Image 1 (cartoon, rainbow, N blue to C red):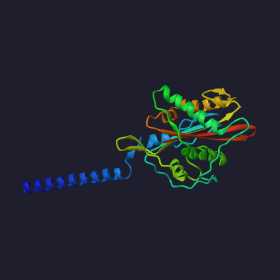
Image 2 (cartoon, rainbow, N blue to C red; image 1 turned 120 degrees about the vertical axis):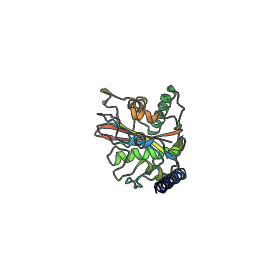
Image 3 (cartoon, helix red, strand yellow; image 1 turned 90 degrees about the vertical axis):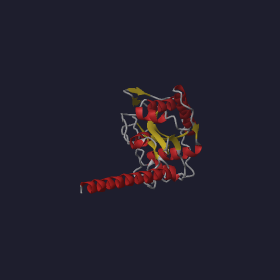
Image 4 (spheres, rainbow, N blue to C red; image 1 turned 180 degrees about the horizontal axis):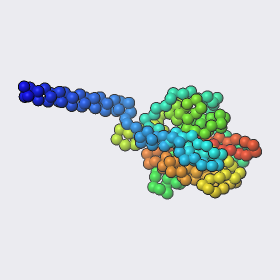
Length: 264
């Protein structure tokens, strides 16, 4: 009787092991079919793409990592892995094919974008990372988000209607898939910031003022580099392209500048 019982238990255990193996194979095959495993884990994505990060006073940083930031100036960073997204629809009126440059009498938005790009590559080069190419297609996404934040008075990687980074890439039909490891991919990344030109700004427990376009561009990059999550996002070795998109507006006699940095 005991011999029969042991045989039955052994058969059941063998059947269980086989079922577990089959399930594991199916899950593994599905992960390959749908693009691999998350790039850096959900936390890193949000920390890369944007989950709340460190927020300060006037000129703070915020990581989204999916992040929302407060203050009279802010920063946010985020990284998306195999892109998800809410599928939300943007509420801004920007035409997906025509997000124009933003300028004032003293600032040229396009020149400012390329200056920021140059300083980003200088930071990467100093740390042994490759230069990023400036992607003008991706710039549409970056300009759109900066403009949307300004027009709808929010500062976050997620719009008031739930639009995410992945949604914005899809809105502009921008395809991004960067291999970060075995079966791991990143489908985009983002840093954001807003600050002021030609007016005192509190940054890193001190007050700064940007009186030239070059100083402003350097200040934007310094803002990201002085935040752990944003710096990590900016220096990731697997990025190949970036785009900077700025929006410049006059608020109560001051020049406010929104900057979005997108990666692929």
